Structure formats: structure tokens, C-alpha cells
Length: 125
Image 1 (cartoon, rainbow, N blue to C red):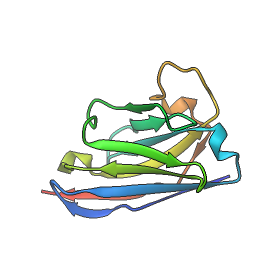
Image 2: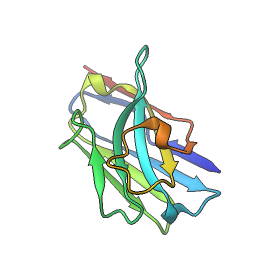
Image 3: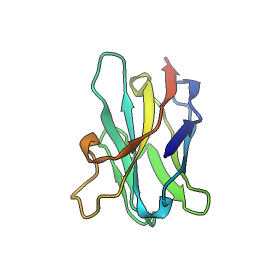
């Protein structure tokens, strides 16, 4: 199983980035997908998750209204569109996959089975 995240980079505050995560080695449409991030010296935190069909999304309060998660099951890919970025959004962003269903939310990293390697997002002030 491989989860390949991409799209990170350096952007000025107020700017936008779109992250992608392409998955192989599993039946993509059977997995809920999530994005997490980890800033230096901080714990990994939940950013967003999306249901298997893409019809339901979950967002952390810190990013709600600025971030949109989507998926394309035909391409085995999830996306994270991030707008109005703040320096506090600087972190390594990880995508993750879980086959667990019916969870009240998908914000706990322990619920995920597979993880990508992460992509660095740096927001300058």
C-alpha cells in the first residue's frame, strides 16, 4: 500500500495551495481518507476527512471555511484545497486511509490504517 502526497511548497500568507494524495495497493473507494498535519515540536493534528463516496466531509475548526477536501475515486486520489493560508498552517501534511466506518468523526490518528510520507507546507508572513 502506498499513499503519495504532493503539492506542498512555500506560499505567502493569504495564498493558496492544493495538496494531492494518490493511493495504490488497496481498494480506494472502500476507504475513508483523512489529512493530518504536524508542525515542528507539535503533535500531529487532524485537518480534514472525507467519506468513501465523497459525500460527507469533516473539518477541524482551525481550517473550516478555508479548506476543502475532495476525492476522485476513478483516479484513486484525494485533494486538499487550502485557501487564505496563515503562517500557523505551516506543517508537514500527511494523508491517511482507514477502512473503519460509522465513527462519529475521523479526527483521531489512531483510527487510520495507512499513512503517506507527508508533504511540507510553509506559509511565510
